[in-house]
Length: 163
Image (cartoon, rainbow, N blue to C red; front, side, top):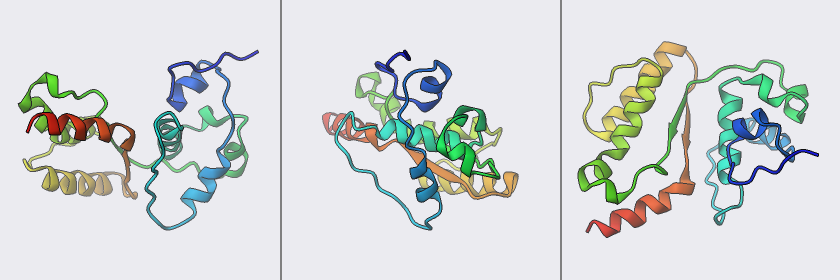
């Protein structure tokens, strides 16, 4: 019997460790074939992180992780897209006001470093535009923006503590 993914909510870890996984990849096909944006608003522990990391693996073309799942049989191309992954889960106000307030820019820099892109813009908005433009030019593909809203609530709560 497969183990349960206790305290593991990333698709890659669940599949790599052969934990029990309920295949919901048919939803990926539905999501990516609609030309729209999605805002996933669910309570804590409802699988947002798992869904988003599943989408991240899909857009990164990690086909081997999907072996035996619905999408592996349906998807023909497995196009690799650059993914900008923004995650505030590791940032706490206790780390200091400067680190906390600079975390959006640090997140962008982390993504730029992953793709060997140098950012010259200093504001978050301009750095984001610069990163997206550079990724589009480098990969000649659309860019997938992956923001873990699961942890944004923590980020916002911590922000209020600094006021």
